[in-house]
Length: 297
Image (cartoon, rainbow, N blue to C red; front, side, top):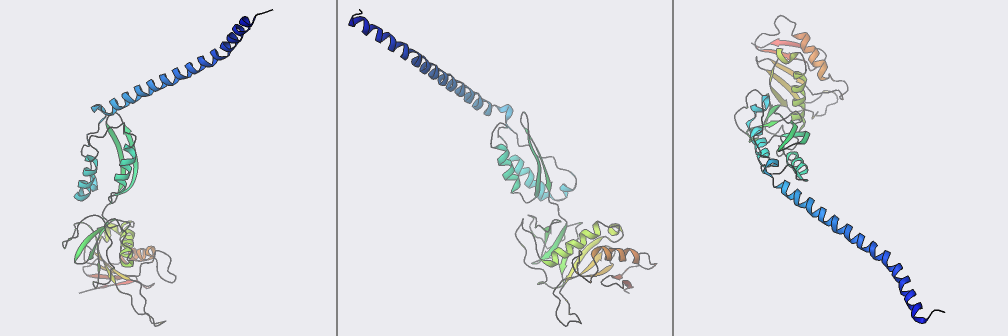
């Protein structure tokens, strides 16, 4: 028979066999976390070192802008300022793309960002669709620039004409409604209609024959039947040679019973075939289905 001492020894050995595997597992787990923490610290150290590496820092150099953009120095200055605002930022920063999207997205001159991509070691490829001046609106004794969407551009108003841009003017000061702030759309019916007419001329063969320099916005006129006031705006187009086109309403296609812009442009092309149609002081009338022209002496 085994003595009590031997039984106690056997029980201790059995307990040790059970505890030993659990202890080794705990030590293995502890070592794993220790190694992982060391690796994470190493990665963090290398990451911080890379962020501080001057080879990855952007210089914020001046953007190379050419073509029509140069005709509007205000846009060039603003885009250069935005580019320089990121000088010193590391190309490795996780939030860099988001910050640039936000900054450029808030710029009125930028209509849409088309590409924003890192190019190592220290450059960003940035491409965007710019808002370009399409016309100038006379309001509050100043000319204000708008783009093709009637968005007001961030350029100070001036009493002097901006060169090489058609102007939109009202026959009276109250014809064109209040101007929105820069970046807002000018929703006035007269501005939108005049801009639509300018765009129609630009997209037609008449762009060279009758270059538009001014669109005059008139108040609504009285109709004979029914005898109620029609508040829709009427327009007259003035060309660079002094010809006047009595346009009537702007109808892109939704107004029943009235000529559309494309129909009026077609009539104008037919009228231009007349022998005296390009004489100084000619006045075209395409408001109805009986177009014609007169020579103003």
